[in-house]
Image (cartoon, rainbow, N blue to C red; front, top):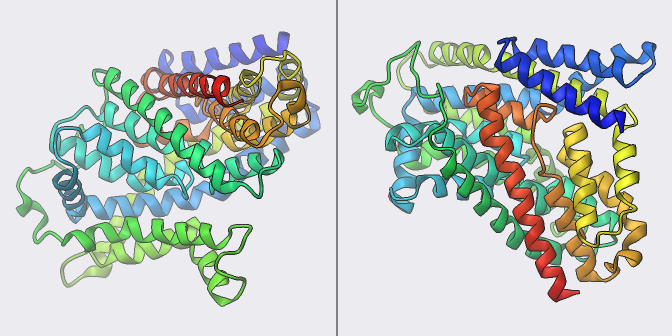
Length: 447
């Protein structure tokens, strides 16, 4: 049990150091990584390489995506395209429910796209809508982050749910997993939307304007682009990633020839965002497009640098925890409690909270409980599908300081750590509890 107390103490240190002592989250997470390594007794000769490896591994996936997504966001904001997108969506869905609109957008985007990438891509749209409609930026942030998170943890073709389905023998029943996953993802996203409402009065500096005053008149931007041109830098990458996911399905619906190879290449997040950046360049007006692009790129690099460093430090902290016996201890002890469909949830939630990655929690927890399905009464197709849902619910419980997504959400939204815990982290806890309750109720009827 001492390992659990160490984990709690580490989380308390991170919250205290960043919110009370005002230490930079990057330094705080780096210190927490070393403290955790010593406290859990990692071999001295592996501590440095573990921290470096964790830092580099997370940035190997999300680092360049953050840079390109940030530059696209800067261009969308400075050319007025973000305003066009916000007005178009508001016109289509109405002005009455902006947080629900943001949740729906996130829900759809994260089916093929990792939630980290989705938040980076959609952040400028969220900010513009919050400003245009005078809506709480914290509420909009929670609506977007939870909408993304719901499908990220519950609906294939996101890698985590697909891997969990494979571990539980459902590789030939992905259609059933997707259908059931969409239902529970709607429940999870609705729970996140409810928490967004309760978060509306939390403080935020996201709309505080420092370097450039935001002018209400559209003349500030010159001639605004049309809706198709404004949306292209965001939705072209999303469509490409969707098509890449379809092409990579185990059943190879598009064959294995040139079309498969081309879509698989173009559908990689980095490649898709680079194409999106090309469409963003088309938004820049004036005779000196190259100079304008250089200015926007420089601004994007300045904005993205601290986010990249903090995200990498979160990855280092998660890698240290993953290298300790903590995850095995929690998983093995909880897997023997015999709690029916609740047990896979507890295992996944413990793993998620301990090491930060939802995908790792999905893969590890599903592998741990797979041999126990007959004893748990879950050894049927529907039982296995509900187990995937229970593991997915656990994999969203909770997103906190050792999760790169926590830092992407908090830093892009300019939240302090205390506010991020009260909004985003609390929302993921509420989502997980509501989702597993729904899964448990369905299991009483369906099994």
